[in-house]
Image 1 (spheres, rainbow, N blue to C red):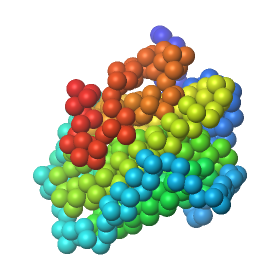
Image 2 (cartoon, rainbow, N blue to C red):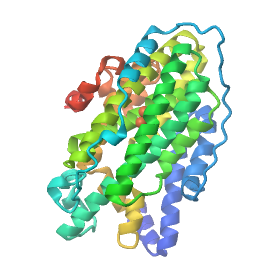
Image 3 (cartoon, rainbow, N blue to C red):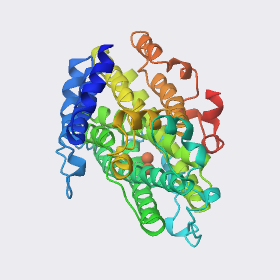
Image 4 (cartoon, helix red, strand yellow):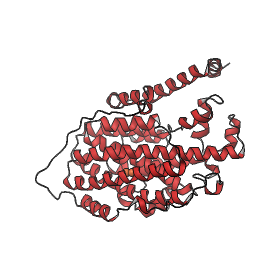
Length: 400
Ligand SMILES: [Fe+2]
Ligand SMILES: [Fe+2]
């Protein structure tokens, strides 16, 4: 008998609780094993410990995160960054009011034609093979819960974005960046408002924060270096958000949600654009080569954390924790068509942005090649992509 089969057999003899603890430990070890650079390990390791082992995001209110950045003042008020000044103007003109969304629309999640996600978001045949056998009504309910779980993570991510945007506005070293940053704080507050209102009044349910999402937010909130905070928030998390919002926008058949996402995506396009402009200036103009290399490694490790780690265990715990193994659930979610589209959209946005800010040098490219993500290298970066492109599913076209 091969060793892996033997191990699987031995594990199944253990009580559920122990099996689950072992699986969670295995995941934590695999996260840490992926961090090859000791400097990256020292910056992400404590957050991984707080997120994945101590589960700080799930310990009730409040979660306190220590933060050690410097607030940067400039009493000369230079008009130093015309591209950021233009984004500031566009942001002021692009403000909208969450109250104006069509909240009167009645949702009907039990009607598969008006669901948050279509039924083919998940691969039901694969599910059957893995022991996930459900009636049609249960399938619709599970799809709805996956939608509610996604929206819950969007909301938690938006809270992270709100607080991080405030920190970045303090720490950024460009005066035009501070003015622009203030508009992003308002944008993120509005996103918290509308996702929270949708979940409360339409879905009536909220899932806890995913441990991997908590780890990433914790890492960038607690890092004292403003440009790493910036890289984490404006490029990595915003890239993740655009992939996730884009997938849901493309797939949802629920009209209120579609309208809500359309508005949010238009704001997010500005946020990533700002990140690219600010970091391009800083990384290519101000950092030493050693500092640049560290950012390059950090971005790769965070991308690996985001690549295949959003498995909706919070839904699994509610539905299947005593029926199928976490490993089977991972396969079911990880290989679902909806998640494939999410990953494609996310990386088709992220990779060109990293190239544009100088974090995809010849030195790191073989690693991106190894994980199959260099195919996005020639895509357009955020400073060339409009909100209309995003809404038209341009990213999906790049990938096709
Ligand atoms: Fe946002
Ligand atoms: Fe944002």
